[in-house]
Image 1 (tube, rainbow, N blue to C red):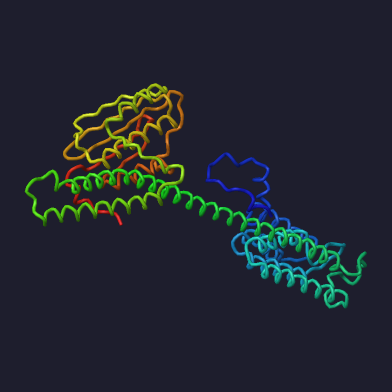
Image 2 (image 1 turned 180 degrees about the vertical axis):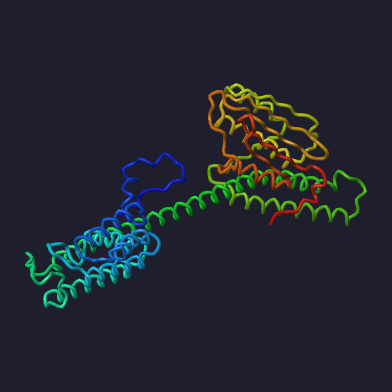
Amino acid sequence: MITYLIAAAPIGAVSWRWRFTTTLALVGPGSVPFALMLFLIENHTLGVDYGIAWSVFPAGATGAAVVLARFRPFEAWLLVMASFTMILLFSSIEAWMPWPLTTTNLFAALVVLFALGRDRRPWLGVLCWVGYLLAGMLAIWASNVGSLDPQPAEQVLPSASLAGDSLTLGALLGALAFLIGLTVRIWRQGRARVAEEERVAETERHQRRLLEERTRIARELHDIVAHHMSVIAVQSSTAEYRLAGLGEEAKAEFRSISGQARESLAEMRRLLGVLRSEDEAGARAPQPGPGALRGLAEAVDRAGTPVALRVGGVPEDLPETVALTVFRVVQEALSNVVRHAPGAATDVEVAAVDGRIEVTVVNGPPPSGGAVPDPHGSGLGLVGMRERVSLDGGTLETGPTAEGGFRVHAVLPIEDRSTIEESP
C-alpha cells in the first residue's frame, strides 16, 4: 500500500533493487507476486476449508483485483465484491473460519481501498467502502435469521454468527486503508504544487535575470548614443561660426538641428534616470573596446589562468556598440573559465574577416578535472552575451569541446549595419 512512495527506475538499474522500501512494493497495488500468492492461497483455502469446488473463480478474482488496482481501482473493487459474493453464497464450513470475508479477500480489499483513496476522487472510495459495509450488514442479518448459513446442520460452531467478527474487522481496516491512500493522494498533490511553484519561480527568476541584463546593456548603449548626440549638438551649434558664407536658411537649419539634438539629449537623460539605479547614477566612464583586451588578458593570466590573446585586423573606426560587445563577450567568457575551469589554458582570438568581427574563446579542461559549464547557458553570463550579440545582428555559438573544455564563438557584422533589422 505504499508503492507510490517508492521511486521507480529504468529496467536494469541496480541502485534500487535491494532496498527495504523496494521490497515493500511487492505487497502494493499492481504487485504481480503478491497477487499470485493471494490467488494460490485463496484457491487452496476455498477448495479445502470452504467446500467450493470451483474455487479458482473467486480466487482468480481476488488475485486479479490486486493487479488491476494500480490501473483501474474501481473495477478491481468490483472483482473483490464478486469474490466476496461467491464466498458468501456457496461456502460450506465444518470448522470455525472467517466468513464471508476470508483473510486473502481482506488483503485484496485493503489494497484496492488504498488504491481508491490514492488515485481516485474521495467520494468514489467512500461509496465503495459504504457498499462493502452495506453488503456486510446484509450478510450478518441473513446469517442471523438463517437465510445464509454455511454451517452444516449437525455442526455446532463457537460463534452464533460467523459473519460478525470478520466483517467488522474488514470495515475498520478498510476505512484505515482508504484514509492512508487519501493521505498519500494529498501528499502527492502537495508535492506537485510545490514542483509547479518551483518551476514558475525558476521561470520568473530567469526572466528577471534576462530583463536585468537587457537593462544593463541599455545603460551602456545610452552612453554611446549620448556621446554621438552630443557631437551632433556641438557641431550644429558651432557650424555658423566655423563655416564661412552660410546663408540665413542654412544657419537656421543648423540651429534647428542643434535644438533637436539637445532635446534628444534631455529625453535620453530622463530615460537614463529610469534605467539606472541610485547607486549607478554617477557611472559615466568611457566604454571599453578591443584596445582594453590586453589588460583584461594580463589580469586573468596573473590570477592563475594562462591566456593567449591574438587580435588582428580590427579596424580603428569600429562602431562603438560592436567594440563594446567584443570586449564584453571576451570578458564574460574569461570569467566563466575562471569560475568553472580555473587554471585551464585559454586561447582568445579577435579578428576581422570579410566585413565581420569574429571572437573565439576556447579553454581546455581544468588541471584539477573540474566540471565543464552548462552548454545551454542557464546563467546570466551566456544570456548577456546572446543579448549583446543579437542586438548587433550577430550570432553566438557556445558548447563543450571534444577535449573537455568549452568554446565561445561570436560573429558580429561591421559592414552594411544600416540594413540590420531593428528589434521592437
